Length: 204
Image (tube, rainbow, N blue to C red; front, side, top):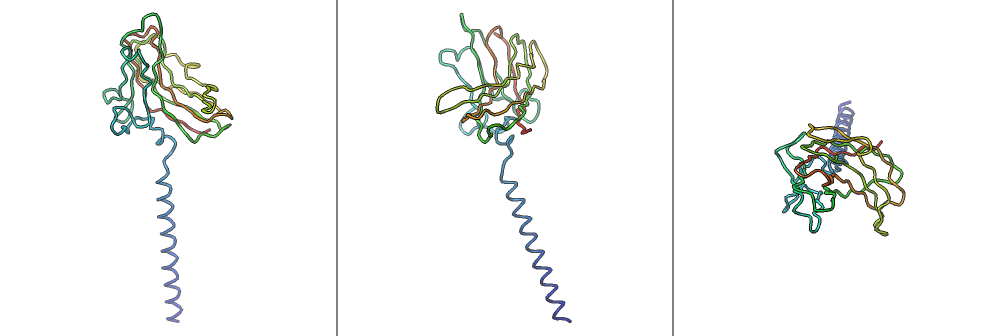
């Protein structure tokens, strides 16, 4: 009987060790795979090493038009966390308008899948509304296939506190590159400023 009890006891210990090991492996694996929103750094908390920009994001500093807008990865005005991104239009280019964007390239979105793009915008002295949009490109053809913008449903002008904007989209079949754009036109916006924070993607 004692021998049988020892066998049962050691069997119980063995099962416990196996289950504990599997639990640790499961937790470790799930923790090592970042979520889509962690990946896109839409809260702008992570800073790019050796650059003033947030990790994974870059401003489209237009040749010959750099002096008309100022891009910042800043901590003074935030909706949540410690960082946001902003664009200040210092003056309008003479005889023309320009679109100034923060840009993020994202991978892993599957064709025909449906997603929601969600984000927050704050403005100061803005006449032409800022926006957040998704662009779908075919890299092989260097072709913009389609884009979906929050401008369809939201117009944020004047001086406004943080406002939530969102839109849904389906990824076109021939898409090979997806961009998130957070931007504003220089048109009628000289002296104005816009902030973006907490940009997220959710699969529906």
